Length: 351
Image (cartoon, rainbow, N blue to C red):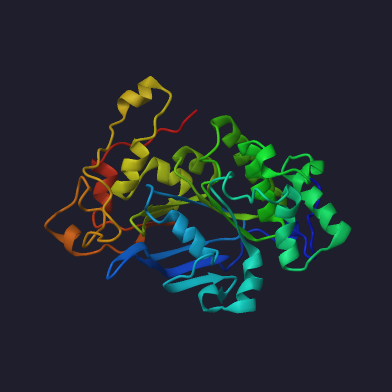
């Protein structure tokens, strides 16, 4: 790929890294009112940062608040409280045109490629819609830009007059990627972009995202259930449980040694295609089901299912802070040292 996809400032000219994080979430809260006096605590005080040019993975069980957090970060839904600081500006405080202009730099790839594309619009119109909304390109230049984007994501540029139903699931997701690239964003939230696809197609989309990141210095927040995919694509991983981040660590370190029992339980469930290695591992079994966000447990939200919890005791009475346990690592557990030695075994690296 040699195109700069430029709409003014070329994407590829942004330097990787930087002193300040590209995005910071500070005490982000999102609650939903679901009846008289009932509140779903979907996101409940989240803190983390994303540096420019990196991929941060976000993992956790269904219903833990991952997708809601992604939508709050991109301001598709407003935060109940907290700060979403993007390039030094708190998006939560912005309204109207100021927010709209900042949102050009944050885009999203949605989970279901069959539901995220309007079936009544052509592919060309779907990809061009962001350009039209911001009045960036018109006429033949807009058509050329759409064809260029289709080419970049590996589709025939002359398919721009076709409709979404004429494409396979993998091709539709490529269209979603092209739409996300249209405004030359700095940060893309990938909300389980491969979970609805066949395994062979998943690999193609992951490779495409990696190629685009290298070419245009994109930054990803990659939300997924598949922990092996997250390990492959991410430099750092956030582990989320019941609306809270419970562990943050570099990817390779997290998969070797865990500092939160929930993380260890998740990783122990990953099958490894080597019978000898699999026999050496011990599955960390969790009791019960994930509690309801309508009425989360007191203290540590994980303590009713935790194999090392002291309940009654500190685990059920005091919420652990997400704090540094080692260089570059954070965990929200009163007994992180015990987690590393008594619960399960390190997960072997796949061949």
